[in-house]
Length: 360
Image (cartoon, rainbow, N blue to C red):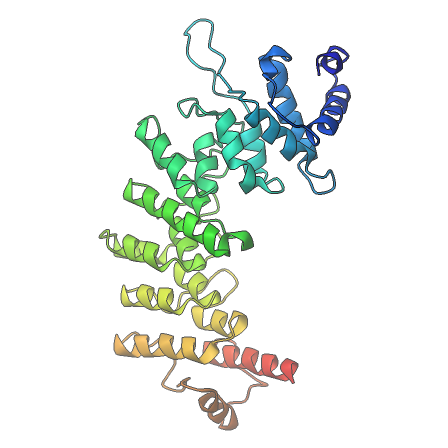
């Protein structure tokens, strides 16, 4: 490796990337004890190669970047922050490979978390990139409650620390609305991390720059236990109807995803049963547009409203206990071809008819 290093002009990216490819050929067949990289490279060169390795963290490149990161971690290399010449304080405003891999969600990024935090082992050196995303945020996003606890125990970080560019908190990041977050182990990790953050004072109603709160994400993701924790914290009643940039309330999102228990809890705690979002949709409309469990959800919404005397102007015409009830309404004097544009019942049943016709 010493010979390969000596041929590189470190100011030229093409030459550094070529070096990484050469090193990969050796790394993939490496056997035995790993070398002390600081005996071969300068610390700044290792950091530069780590950043460059992000170019190869793809399936097309056979995960060469991932293997390089793993190799560096197993070699025992540990990052140490540079110190300010005048104050002797760590210089923490810089982008690291940990930022790039986690924020950019590189291929197999979750499998690299342990290696990355082995390299960047000093949690007191909470590096922050140009967007305001920190290593603490990376731990939250990865659902690593064990790391989050260690960050918070240093008492150098507010649990509600925001990413400057997006306004997201660690609590937002712990509850991602992505398919991979709904595999059971990842879902459990997300719940554990979010629960920890809420108990440590992270505010579930703080909105990011798109007006999305953690409460929106909790209801959208169907995290019953987290909603119970939120409701047990004696929150202000009006918070439960917080609206995101699309005008959606937590109830909109819960019913859109078919989360009956979440929706029922929200309604029992005085959530508005018929808010209209920016697209003109009410929760009832979203039930018909996006869920398969139409009648059970619509019945629940109706019965809660009637029981609490908050009937959302359905005029007693809609009793959606079963599909037969809807068919009975359709066969009566209601004309689905000419719905009243101000009648949400008519509009939603028209959507239902179109879905039934397309399924035939």
